[in-house]
Each structure stands twice: as C-alpha cells, then as structure tokens.
Length: 106
Ligand SMILES: [Zn+2]
Image 1 (cartoon, rainbow, N blue to C red):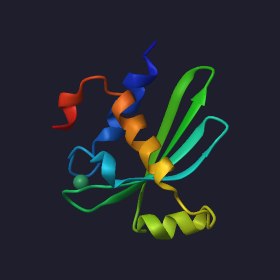
Image 2: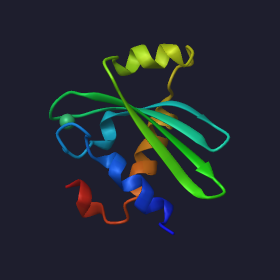
Image 3: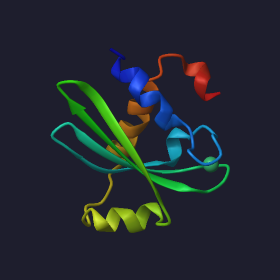
Image 4: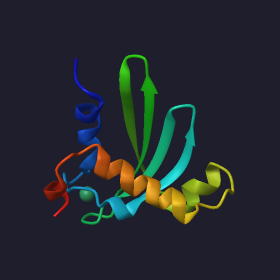
C-alpha cells in the first residue's frame, strides 16, 4: 500500500501543463475532520484547480477539479471566513511536509 506521501505527490503538478505547483499559490479553503480543501493556481499556465484531500482509515484520498474561479471566488463558496496568515503558513508547512526533500521546490 502506498504511503500518504506518495498519494499526495501527484497533486503537486498541474494536470494541464505538468508544471509543479508553487506552495505560495495554494489557498486553504476549508479544513475539518481530516478533510482539507485547497485552491491551487498553476504559475505557468494559470489554470486553477480545487483539490480535496481526505484522510481516511485507508490512507489519504485526493481529488482535483479544474475550475475557472479565482481563489477568492472559490473561498466565497466555502463561506466568508477570512484566511489568516496562520492558515497560509499551515498550507506552506503541509506542502513541505509531504515531500521530504526541500530540493524538489528549488
Ligand atoms: Zn499548468
């Protein structure tokens, strides 16, 4: 069985142009009960994706959906909670933590 880290790795690439996502482009939309939703925008082709990540007893399950909406617009769909700098930092830490080698992002 794959580790959760292996399951999440494909999310780090744009499904359109295969460009690696920049962690700073990730917007945390919602986080509850082991379920996390991100909005990611590709730095290369500008395509946006909403990614759902669920932690289950079987491991981490992820699903990405292409969207035309900007991060702020999607965030409105998830409610009007402001995203704090702490949450932005959480996303950053999240991305760093599931790819152990820092050089992947350089
Ligand atoms: Zn792209």
